[in-house]
Structure formats: C-alpha cells, structure tokens
Length: 350
Ligand code: KG4
Ligand code: ZN
Image (tube, rainbow, N blue to C red; front, top):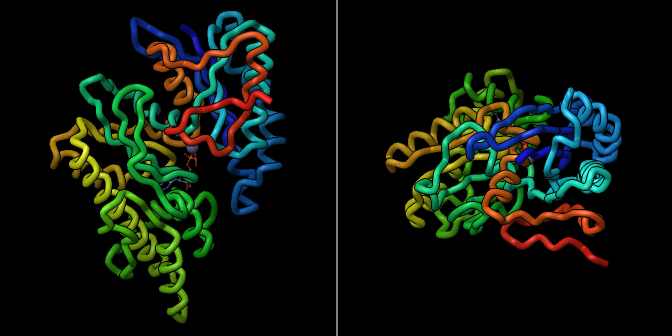
C-alpha cells in the first residue's frame, strides 16, 4: 500500500508519500510549504492569496517530493476534502482528482480534523488497548473533545460555542500587536511572565457539559489592558502568561473530567495548538494522575501537514473504512468547507 497525500485546507501546501512496512505505517517523504510569511503582513490568512499560492506551489512540490518515484508507483491518493477554506481545498482536490483519474488510481477524501487526530499515530505506537481514547483537538478553527472508540469511530463530547483556542491566541496576539500567528508568540512570551498577574475568567469551567467558550476570555484580556494607562514589556509577558493559564485550566479540567466520565484508556492531543509546551505538560501531569497514557504528535506534525492525512487514510484503507473512488466517480467528490467529522460525508451528486 503506497499513498500520496495532498493537504491544502488553509495556508500550507503539503505533500507526502506514506506506505505500509510490515503492517505499520512508514512515512517515506514529507514536504510542507508554508505561506505564513506571505499572510503575516495581512495579520491573517487571505483566502484568495492562499489559493493562488497553492496553485503556484502544487506541481513543483509534488515533483520534488516524488523525486525519482513515479506516480505509477502510487496506489492511492488521499486528499483533504474539508473542513477548511473552500478556495484552498479546491486547489488540492482538483490536483488529486486529476492525478487519480489520469493514472487510474483510487482516490479517498480525508477529513482534516481526522488527519489531526491521526498525527499522533505517526510517532507513537497506539494500539487497540488504548481505545476508547479521549481526544482533545485544538487548532485555529476547532476546539473539540472527541471520544474515539476505535478507528473511524467517533463521538463528539463537546466543542467551542464561539472562538477556537488557536483563534483566541491569534486574537489576543493581535490586540497586543505581537504578530501572526499568535499562538507560538504568545506561548513563548508566556514563559517569561507570571500567570497570576491578571485575574481572568475560566469560561464554562464548571458547566456540566463539555462545551467551551473563548471569545469572552479574549474580551477580558482587552478590558484588563484598557484599564491600564500604559503597557510595558513586563505587562505583555504577564498578560500572555495569565491568558495561557486560563486557557490551559479550562482545557485540562474538561478533558480530565471527560476522561473519567467515559472511562477512557488513553488521552490524546492534536491540532496546531498541540505545539504548546505548557498545555502538553499540564495534560501529561493529569494523565499520569489518572494512570493513563498520553499521546501527542511530534512538533513537526502539529501544524497542517500531509503526513497526518496519509496516516488517517492508511488506517481507513487497512480497516476497510475508506470511501474509495475510481474512474468517473472521482468527479462526484466536492470540497466541504464545513465537513463535520462525526457526520457522514456525503459528496454532492447533482
Ligand atoms: O492546526 P493548525 O495548523 O491549523 C488549523 O487547522 O487551524 O492550527 C493553527 C493554530 C493557530 O491558531 C496558531 O496560533 C496555533 O495553532 N498555534 C499555537 C501554537 N502553535 C500554533 N497555539 C498555542 N501555542 C502554540 N505553541
Ligand atoms: Zn489544521
């Protein structure tokens, strides 16, 4: 089994080749072209610009990633089909569809969030005994607690009612004019600050359900800063630390409560925010208290990448859960900007 995966859900053009080696996945080639430097000056991703850049990057990146390998050495093409920016998704999907049709390969759509979940499988030995797993997905667009009962078997336990965690980091960075993307900057500054300086709310921390809300926290940061006559470097690092602590307190409390209620066998973290060292440390401590293994992706697989899409595809094919398309059927596949993992993906047929 040899899979070529394509990921273009936002501002990263990503390609990889992943195969099976003795019943385990083997990542042979992996390339990510990040557009961050282009979008930085706009303070966020500009969809039209992202799509144009994907178009320029895609074919040269596939060529350089494949190297001496030919497309005829590939068995499957996996492509992110949602959720994400529609204009970005179209670029990756059109490429995948054209390649699969022209070379008579099997095409399979992969959900971006499912990809993030499987990023943990790229560097950990996760086995059947680790199910059910409590998965905390934290990215720029998503904040969800998912109960993973087995491969491809998910139950949504809770999600944000407004901003995603990564989005909150980005917004807080923006209001302090720290740059984009805010997550890595705020988390780095937080290490130098004192987390008890500003009294910030822990939204929904004691609610019975597993919902999250982060937009109020961002507003609380704004109001606290507005109250001050001036803001110096020390205030900024203290605010970053206080904000980060509020976020971590909520995420860890809800994740550990859900882990207990659903009697899980492991805890997993994924999504762009899983790069956050303080969050990983806090979850690791909590998992140890509960005597549960804690899995998270290697740093290079925390942001958007094709390896995680190929990993999800690998287990789908292996477990005969893949929605495989071949020949003319390939053209029925459409991008779904709001594809929800827990709902069945229905390609438009009209
Ligand atoms: O998964 P991802 O690359 O893209 C989406 O699918 O959304 O996540 C990007 C998000 C951004 O909001 C970014 O600020 C955040 O992840 N992020 C972080 C860190 N590194 C990236 N947030 C907190 N701490 C970090 N170290
Ligand atoms: Zn992502």
